[in-house]
Length: 293
Image 1 (cartoon, helix red, strand yellow):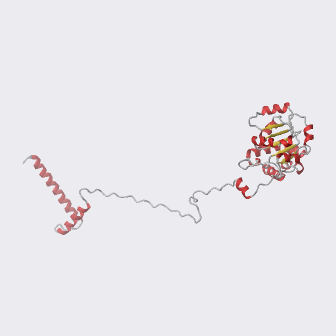
Image 2: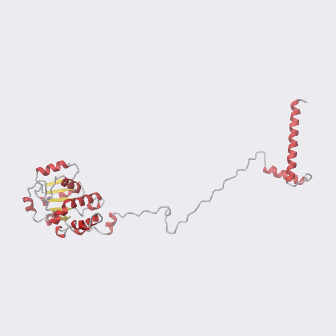
């Protein structure tokens, strides 16, 4: 017998002794008598079924934690507990569908000025900025064209036109919201203006220096433009309002978004600034009449 076979037999003998000792210890722990063959067979069957040659250790699965469930209140919308729904802003078109547009009246302008200056000025200053009823011309009742309205409020226009010979000024000043609207008004007053000279007073495609040069060199009867450019001309002494007799606000006209000129924040601010700068004082003195078209 070779040395390798002897060593192998010794190893197997040692392994058998170890397994016998381990099984005896297990029987002692489980209080089973070594002579009880039936109990030992049951134990061997159970271990065989639980552990096989290809068996793998059991994998313990992690239990999912229960998710919280929030019940929505009756009539509530999903997500209302996290964020409150923003209120839908009312559009001007929605308001006009419910009620037809009303023509502007002097009281509307008075209320607009009092709301604007109410928190910024003292009581005495607000009184000085109030416009007397005598300075207002009849308002447009939405039945007039621009030419027919001007004929109604300016019956002595021919006389004013002939007597006007001063430069850097106009007899009538028309204030509207945009350059395109200015061009529309100039076209629509053809029946009224006759051979009067009309000056465009808006910023689109026209530099302020060109307008100042035209006012210095020539005599113009009517000026039509936006409040921002008219205000800039008055501030730079390019336009003087001392000879002006009529100032017309394009009050009732609405653009594609159904906004009036006073519904546009920039135009509203520039118009109020222009009124405060010079026009209100001239109206209170009685030299200028104010109309709402």
